[in-house]
Image 1 (cartoon, rainbow, N blue to C red):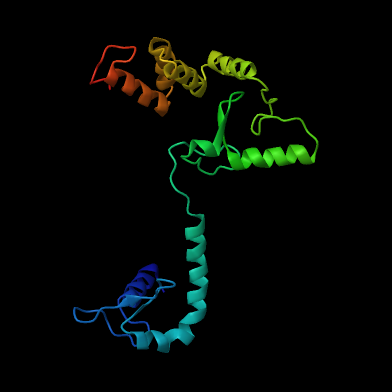
Image 2 (cartoon, rainbow, N blue to C red):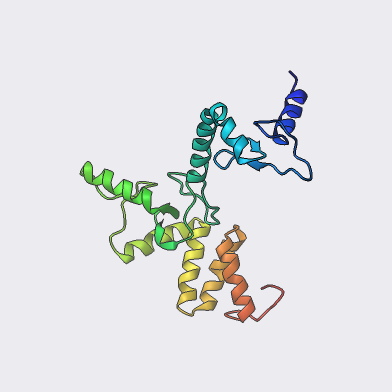
Length: 208
């Protein structure tokens, strides 16, 4: 049977009751099987009559649909965790930014790395680049400066954000501008707010 023939059979099956074969017309409405969505029936009686023939396929399809729903992941504008490749949660508390490599790691991978280190009596290192984890704020700032020096857009945006949060908008502007030039969307947003509210720059609605 050709693919065209298969398509015609599928269309015919989709528009007819799987039990009695009656076609769906204006006065006859068919209802899909609630568990699998594969077949339609014109009445509850037809569905009950067809159950012995359909039950095995229905259960198999229901498992597939359940798994699809279970593992369907919400879209994330924050990218994927570079370790497990799952979308980063929009909740900031569920991920950690590593200053050594500017990678945003989901807390699941951070925790898994911590368990691995404890189990093997290892020193605490970055889950991604294996750089020793900073122990003080001074070491954190030192790591960030290194990333800024190599024009890392995330580090540039974070440093710009620090200046912004302190009210130093003029100090934030060059870092955010450079990060935005590299395509960092959060830097673009911060700049739009600055232009829109005239923070550190002349108010400009077009730039905002």
